[in-house]
Figure 1 (cartoon, rainbow, N blue to C red):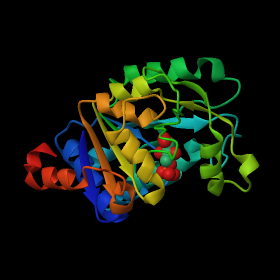
Figure 2 (figure 1 turned 180 degrees about the vertical axis):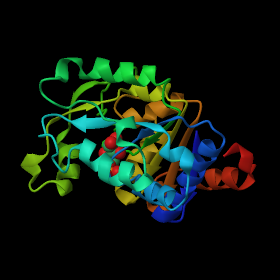
Figure 3 (figure 1 turned 45 degrees about the vertical axis):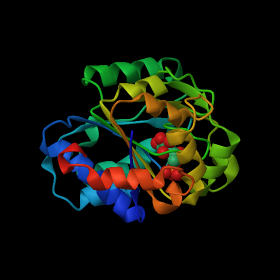
Length: 256
Ligand code: F6R
C-alpha cells in the first residue's frame, strides 16, 4: 500500500488527480469507479480544471446509493454524482451507472450491478472515501471481506455523519445498496482519499491496524495497487508517517 501525506486537502486532490490523469493519458482508464461524499471533491475539482478528453470518454460506476429516496431527490447519489462528477467532468450521463436503490428493484439490484460492471470489463481505477466507522462504499463494520454488491444497513454513526446533507437526521435513509468489499478489491487499482482529523482514527486502523471486518477499509491491505492519499490532519494517528514521506520522496515518478 502506498501512503501519501499531503499538506492540505487541495494538495491531496491534486495528487490524486495526477494519478488519474496519468492512467487516462496512458490509455489504461476505460472504467472509473467513483465515490460520493466530501472527500473526493478536491480530486473531481482538480480533474475538471484539466482538459482530459479520456476522462470524458470513460464509463463510470458509483459505489453506492441510498435505498428508497424518490427519483430526483437532491441527495440521492444519482443526483449528487450528476452534479459533482458527471457535469463537472463533462461525462456522458448515459455512461455513468449508479446502483438501483428503488424499493421495487432491491432484490435484484446487487446482481444487476455486478453484471453491469463485469460487462464493462471491470473497474480500472476505483476512487474511495472512508467513513468514520472505517467503511468504504457503505460496507459498515462486520461486512464480509469478500462481499459483493448488496443491500446494507447504515450504522447510526454513518447516519449522523451524513445528516449534514439532509433537512433533519431522521431523513437520512437507513439502507443502501453498495458495492461489496470483494467488488472493490476486484478493481485494478484503488485510490482512497481522506481529509480532516475526524478521519484520522479510521485511516490509522485501515492502514496500520489488523485486517478485520471491524474496519472494512483494512481489506485494502489485500489489494496489490492501493494508494491512500491523506492530508496532515487525517494522517495524525499514523505511526509510520515519516517513513511514508521518505518512501514518496525517494520514489521514481513513473512508479506513482
Ligand atoms: C460514498 C462512499 C462513502 C464515503 C464516506 C466518506 O459513495 O462511498 O464511503 O466515501 O462515507 O464520506 P465523506 O467523504 O463525505 O466524509
